[in-house]
Every structure is written in C-alpha cells, then in structure tokens.
Image (cartoon, rainbow, N blue to C red; front, side, top):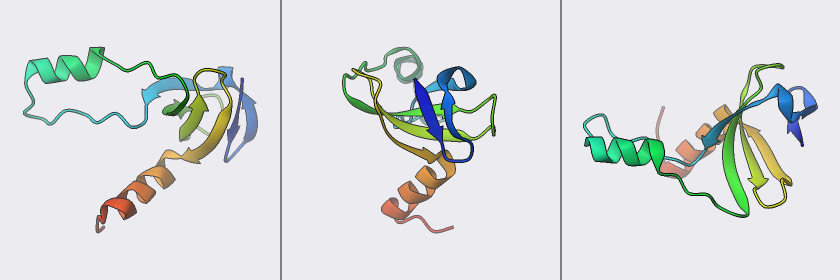
Length: 96
C-alpha cells in the first residue's frame, strides 16, 4: 500500500505508523474507569471507508488523516491532521 503524503508524495506504508481511528472521541478527564476501558479496548472494526490517523515517521513527521477503505485498502483522501482539525472546528463553530 502507498500513502500519498501531502508533503512528500506517494510513499510506501512502511514509512508510516498507524495510530487508530481518527474519529474516536477521548473520554472526559472525570470519566469512569468503565468509560476509559471501553474507549481504550473496545473498538469498531468497520468494513469500508474509514478515517484513520497515520504518522509519517520516516518522512516529514506529519500527522495525517487518511480515509481508507478497510475492505480493499483503497485510499480515498489524505489531509494533514491540522487541516482536518481546522475543518472540524469550522464545522463546530469554534472560535480561536
């Protein structure tokens, strides 16, 4: 699998580290142990398009949000995590 890094171009997946679901919400600081255990250990295993966090450790060292089809590994979109967060903040109406 090759990931089209926005900074470095298409690179082999071995240059990246998979970090998990990009849409997962972290539990609140005062969440119960059960809520923390559920967030850490219980994950969905979706088939189809899925937004994932990847780190380009052997390249530009950027955090990326990759939209990948987990059934066939086709990559539909790649954006920097910073751009994804800014877009999410605009959608949520956050003010900086």
